[in-house]
Image 1 (cartoon, one colour):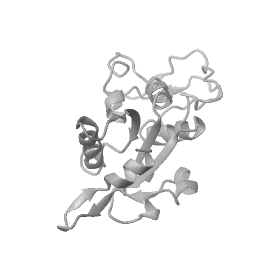
Image 2 (cartoon, helix red, strand yellow):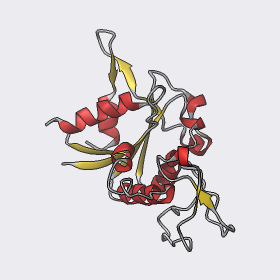
Image 3 (cartoon, rainbow, N blue to C red):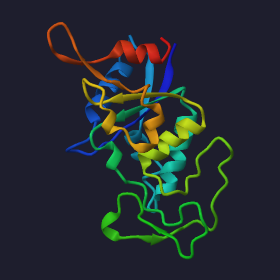
Length: 201
């Protein structure tokens, strides 16, 4: 049985959590695990972000679509996760603000631009509005929560790092587990058995 699983993580080059994503993707590509992992970077590098005027709301809408199409979501929490603010540049924030602005995706050096939306689109009862002041990471979490997806939270650590949890995840602290463990040789390896159990395999 194959499942599509959405991965949310901090992809900063020097202090992000890409190492866990790489392990998950490796599991998804072999003939044993049978999981189709869709990570945030895949969505962000796709057709939506290739448009000349891609905005945070465009990406957030696509995140909603991908999360809704998934059977579960994995949130990777590192030591910098709680402080990440990428995606929160919208000054409209779901309200009717005069001349709201935002920073187009990957165009920080060009400054802000006036909002291209004439109105805040209605997203329905099971979607977080794509027009908000949430970071991308928080938006993904809120979308998974409101759409009632299976939520799996792992620390990029061999220990439980409660202090790393963003405030919006605090109610889920009892679910969060270390992703890494030590094998019989003392090597740091991903806890596949935990992920397998959480995904219902």
